[in-house]
Length: 216
Image (cartoon, rainbow, N blue to C red; front, side, top):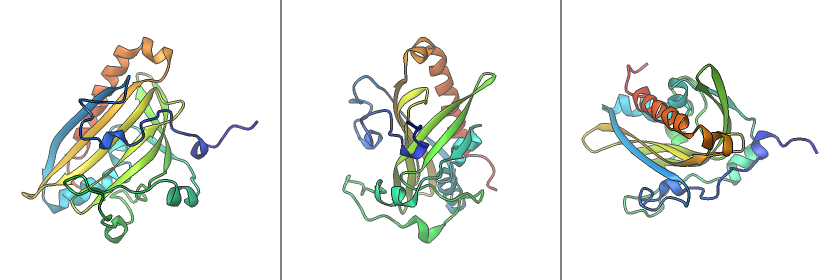
């Protein structure tokens, strides 16, 4: 039987969308380690525009040193299988703010992320580059809060989900929030778990720094 194309393969964990849960840190999916961090990355509309378009075009990963190979996913999959998720402040689902009305491409000219997109991330790991397949499981599209989450797929060093959300508050400040839950994907990565944790912390710092530099 021929191998499935990357876009045809399922994610490697069960709690899809759990990074949206308000009580993630208290009640993560069983067997997973949760994480939440929030950092102010700047101020003003120019920073806001730069930040959210960068996040929604894989800019945060590229700026952190990852390579991104996008899978040629059929539009029928991205249009019908996954749905953008937006919520009011009280958690009630809201009508999307229509990202397409504001921008079609990111700051580097890349097409904006769509729910269901699949990518092969190349993560620098010492002298090697570890391939980490992932799928966009939801997109957040609100007037002052935008971003996405991806879930891991077979071949990724971890199992779990990570979200990258940028928000502009009423005072004009722009914030990046990262939420995740994860565990090693197999026995080998359990053996090198301390190294994996250090690598996670290193790239999380890079993520937070990646949007706070000069605006191009």
